[in-house]
Image 1: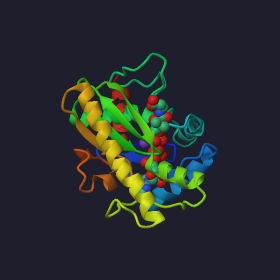
Image 2: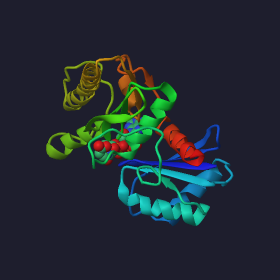
Image 3: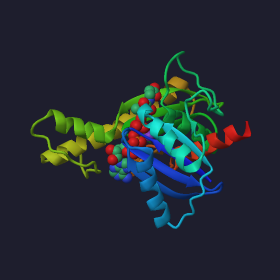
Length: 256
Ligand SMILES: Nc1ncnc2c1ncn2[C@@H]1O[C@H](COP(=O)(O)OP(=O)(O)O)[C@@H](O)[C@H]1O
Ligand SMILES: CC(C)(COP(=O)(O)O)[C@@H](O)C(=O)NCCC(=O)O
Ligand SMILES: [K+]
């Protein structure tokens, strides 16, 4: 069975793929100092809680945080006796092309999303991922990653207001009923929520205009459903998009 690990700047997600379906999805905070032994203690406890047999033969990792990869490699080697495929490393072949400026580093999560989106929908896509940052990945007709947009994440924007302004509290995002807030909480939620609706709409419209063709918009990430409500910002929301991409890349590397 395949263990797919998607490490973002905030959360690290582990999923077990049996070749047909994901048996479980486990989430922990991303922390570069977490050791291989600590990963295993946490992982094996949850696996036995869900009654899953520990039968991992392959591991694939995508990490936006380079420092965590070392301990994840040790984890794969020590407990499953395998050498993981790490997306973005030369030994990992991608089933799609990457057409960006020479020497630039593309976040591996964005490459994985591109592969997943192309596998499920074909080309001409915009993939919006609501993570620590909100990224827009543009997928060409032939499935190539051709660049995109990086915006501050929803929670990052709220946290920045709180950190930089003495009178602004820490608040959680939600959908406000109206735009004009009548207290600090409502004003902050309105600014970030409706600001984000505008941001997503404007960026997608401009990408489509720049490309001069219709494009399908796919969203993923924990906060994507909140922004879908009645706003019709995207054509589809796919919670497991990044994990699906990891299984496709793994299969591609096994086959080649
Ligand atoms: N279902 C959810 N509801 C509310 N907040 C969420 C949800 N899922 C994730 N978040 C928050 O959204 C932000 C991005 O999370 P995540 O998608 O895991 O980011 P990353 O992939 O960058 O680690 C984090 O601040 C996280 O706490
Ligand atoms: C833009 C990102 C920080 C998003 O990371 P995430 O929100 O998933 O943690 C990550 O994809 C990254 O570090 N990218 C490198 C630069 C680039 O993709 O162009
Ligand atoms: K992400």
